[in-house]
Image (tube, rainbow, N blue to C red; front, side, top):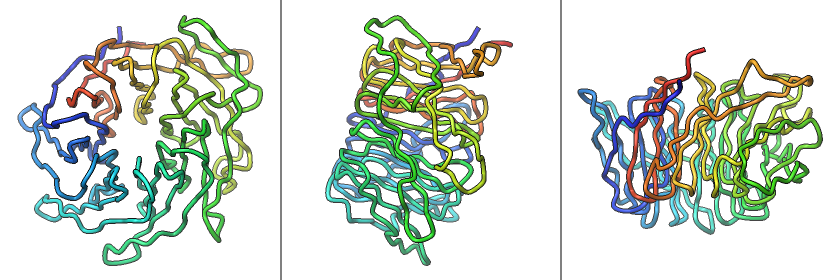
Length: 357
């Protein structure tokens, strides 16, 4: 039987905690919040504790943190409209080396590309920016993308190539790629055409029709290990699985299109704020305004005649936190460890045990 057991509750933020992210080695957990602090948690003697607190870089809420692929750099973004780049030196200390400005409103998310060449940011100003570091830790903006019509909430990069995905209050998910001259939107996932459910009975539906997106703001999106599937979540209380259609690795990422192949609904009864796809064991974690964390697993033994995937609820913690759960993050090296953060200001580390197969 599957289980999600609390390992430790961490307390260090003085207000709501917005984001948690593991470094690539899985040894440091970064968290940030409305108190403008970034806290780096490390394990010692089987216990996690705050080892470093980064302050004074931002004047307002720190909304998201993101690690570079090497773990040398940490990016943070804030409601003060800035992005801060932190660099870890040989002693393990972190110093602020750059502040990136340009967004006209709150910066909601930052994310590094798998190559480490690009940093992306998005904002309430409806734009997505692509940054690059040319030399000596000097960052330049390569492109400003105006494809969204509302607040852009979340960004993520493909784990296999430099493809960027964003999601927004405008109910869409967009995919961006460098076409050689500039970064362009190569595909938009939009137009909710799926079956409408009026009850809250849990369900899993598969689709082979047009790409049905969420019918209201999309809060989060993430890739699986291959880069050929996406998971998204929304204010409509559903989780959707998207499949890339053909042409893998041929350089025409958006040309073949993406299709919604599964919708999970009725499991959360309020907005779903975040999803994270475990790239080691395939489990999907979700969290939201109902204070719960839920884990979904793909049922590899159950597929319909068209071989659409089926996902099932593996485990649920109804009161994972005492208030909204804002983010979840799987440890990239120790796939059983899951971190979460909440409006209650706490960070929690969980141990997930998969059901024996």
